[in-house]
Length: 430
Ligand code: HSE
Image (cartoon, rainbow, N blue to C red; front, side, top):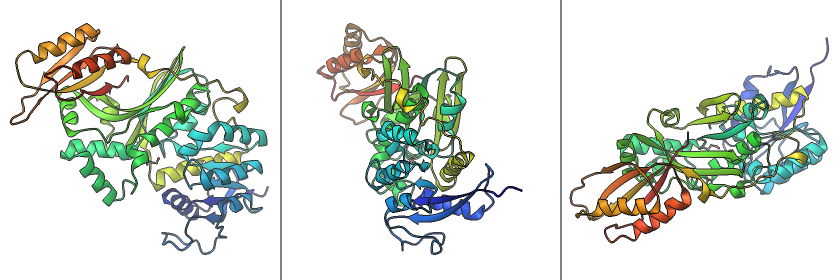
């Protein structure tokens, strides 16, 4: 009988995902999906003494994750520190430079430095795997990189941030404001103490930048992403959108056209009956549109110790097979250039909410201004509001170029009866 190979795993970062991985490997000492055995032989984290739900006293401790990556006892380096730069990047570079396989859940690192890390990994013949970086337990990365490599993907779009999805779902369900729901989510530990990465849309932008690179065979280009988070989503818009048959979701999308690639994150309207509108709470959901396969939809937990650790373990299993694939869809040396498309040329439908004086002729003036600007109205709704200085009117438009819409909004905002700049939300192209 041949001896099972033992893979010595160094784990840097013992937060939610690191804890989930150590718990999983401790509870499954027989985890050997590719015939080898994974044994944790070193750990590193910010604090050694912080209380943890598992015992690390028997594991060699490294204050410095770079030293753990360089340790002769580390065959596979698992980076769960997070952050696009700093110790995470230094340690991943050290491991790859030494030709060691790296498994990471770090979306910021891959979205912002993926091309250079892929070049290093491929030059050294070391796998660089990051299934856990996007959609937690849902195997979106492997599906796009491997299973769909025979198709030509035109677009990917979905809900990639569970915290935002939870907040929007709770706002609608309970009638509380963004600030109230966020404060509660932080109290319950669902949202980070500093929620900027999540609610600002940056986490979703990291993830969609990675999916775009995998889907379109280009280098990730996070800097080109257009990003708007959910802090400005008002309860009034959630209710009015619902009256029009829509639900507001934070939608991240990447589209490829002959002009290039457009990556964006926006609060967007999805029809109530659409699967994206029905993915509630902290769920993640993703549509992939392939020219040959057509549409694929996946949904599942995008965060949490169990699902994310399962994705990390699956990458460790891949390492054990010994296979080394290109990090993205194509080798780093032949990735297609990422040509960003000017978002103002993007064509889509929109929702506009205006606050207007309740007086004769206002609706006529608004619709005349839109008509002159070349924007066609699809539906129109005015809600009576008692004792308010302005009344809200909402409308949806037919498909229009964003530059045309923006010019029309400027003109509407200048009308004497319009009290504030109209609120624009895009209707998701799904
Ligand atoms: N903070 C992320 C979310 C999970 O809320 O979806 C990790 O990417």
